[in-house]
Image (cartoon, rainbow, N blue to C red; front, side, top):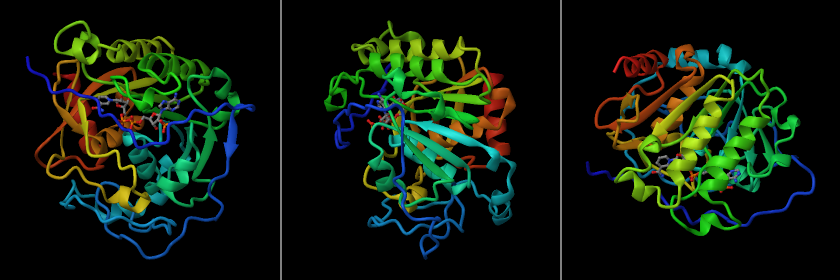
Length: 339
Ligand SMILES: NC(=O)c1ccc[n+]([C@@H]2O[C@H](COP(=O)([O-])OP(=O)(O)OC[C@H]3O[C@@H](n4cnc5c(N)ncnc54)[C@H](OP(=O)(O)O)[C@@H]3O)[C@@H](O)[C@H]2O)c1
């Protein structure tokens, strides 16, 4: 079967690896409190909270994609966000500057869910998310390849983890400093999972379709440098950890990474007309998926009990999507189980 899976090489992130003396280092990149409320975009769709606006020091870029109705969230739903029980969460996002990760963080901020980031380059947090109340967004400096960066203090109070780390499938500048799939997708995930507290309510790991077939064509081509094999090893470690987990395996990722976007612009990003979501199980799905959809799937899975202990493949196709309607996501995950 023909397969168009390819991993995007992203070369415009700073690539230097730093040596840390103290592990982990909490960073305070957001000097101004609280989140600002200047005028800005007011009608987000999936990432919708009309009251959350920032005065990022960065230029707000024009949105290229047409904002066509995501599955709508009613204003009533939006208004209830601030008193939502989900506000008791503290979500550790690992890989929060990456394509999926930045959308996860933006969406958590927009939902008033507290998040903590583990970043190799903490300065990227302020570039992407602007100035934030440190109650809402905390940044720790660290590299998942270094177990000493994963000190218990990093996990204090953390209720959920979304791990969207990754590197390129083929050699690129992003491998600089030995940040290869083996080190990131296997060793990094293993180190992270080993360090997580047993009290964790859920870890969501972003993996990839094709991981169970890395020896078969066409997947073996993608796997020439081991990316699928190492992602599968990372998955297996999560599955055997005893922690409550959900694994999300995206098809080829589209939309983003929005490397030069700020928070407001991130929140405006849409999946265009490919908003419908297909979720499968058994590693049979082949296709593409919007990073916006993957980010939303990770966040939704945190609150859907029956997704615990499950692995899902995800694609997005033309049509109306679930937006961030929890009921629609529940149906999608439930139907995947019965396929
Ligand atoms: N591209 C595709 O078509 C495709 C298809 C299926 C699955 N996937 C997988 O989906 C996930 C999300 O992909 P994406 O393209 O959105 O991600 P991405 O843009 O490549 O971002 C990866 C993130 O991981 C972080 N990271 C890398 N190495 C790290 C390390 N050693 N310690 C801590 N953080 C580290 C990066 O931070 P830095 O800024 O420090 O580098 C970045 O924030 C990845 O696991 C990817 O492999 C991708």
